[in-house]
Image 1: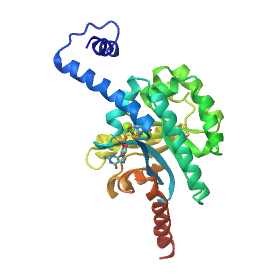
Image 2: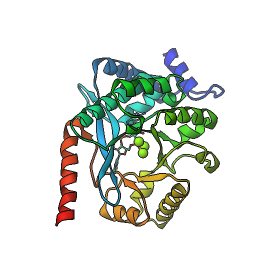
Image 3: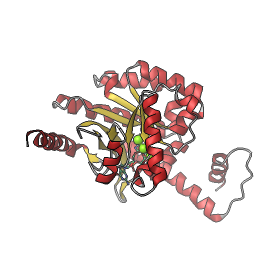
Length: 294
Ligand code: C2E
Ligand code: MG
Ligand code: MG
Ligand code: MG
């Protein structure tokens, strides 16, 4: 299939000479098939958001949720974003998909606020394409207004590489979002290439320490150093730090000892369906009350 092969060659860069073998062709066709299926899925409402709690490291109070997309495929079941977000990115489908995520996360937060859940922010992942889109800022503003939310209710997460790709353009977009009152964070910090001189120019409030550093923090002394140095760097730039992927009490205690502000991970909660969130918040509150009054 010449179109598919051409598309694949383009994805690899214009000046690369590509030698196609049957496996590569199959991978390209797989992606093309998936992008078709993603379009159908968007039309038919097969996506859903799950929500993972972010907690204050010391008090364990829930301070926010991160919205994480899933594809509920009628035959294959629940599909992870790692499988389809890269395809959506490559095909620009990420733009309408990202709009859906923003709208749905804001709608959900409004519903929770109306039910009395206050002081909880919603973190939303933003892709490279979205950050580059000239419509992003006006669309975010319109979505906030539609759901009667404040800018400060929403935090947008972008990865380092996305922010650093075209720093001048990123800074402009991020500043415009910041002017709407949104909070901004760098996701998976430490895994991309970051220029520290640009980092300090970005109008961000939070660094999310990548899960790969937290994972081996108990056994790998280098990871302890990376975590403590990153926390110190962040604090010296006036930023908060979220420890990602906290799975054990030992990891939580280490991050707490080193002043990490917020934590997120399976130790506290897996990403939950929307229906489970209010119960989780009530239980979290009740268990902290018990500690206070015990
Ligand atoms: P991320 O933004 O870094 O999200 C954190 C990922 O780590 C999530 O995977 C979450 O389920 C997982 N995680 C959280 N705590 C733990 C833990 O304690 N242990 C382990 N092993 N994993 C943990 P998920 O939901 O599969 O999402 C993967 C990535 O897909 C996200 O990484 C994000 O980059 C992307 N993604 C998810 N939703 C969206 C979206 O709506 N838009 C865009 N553009 N990307 C999204
Ligand atoms: Mg994220
Ligand atoms: Mg992350
Ligand atoms: Mg990630």
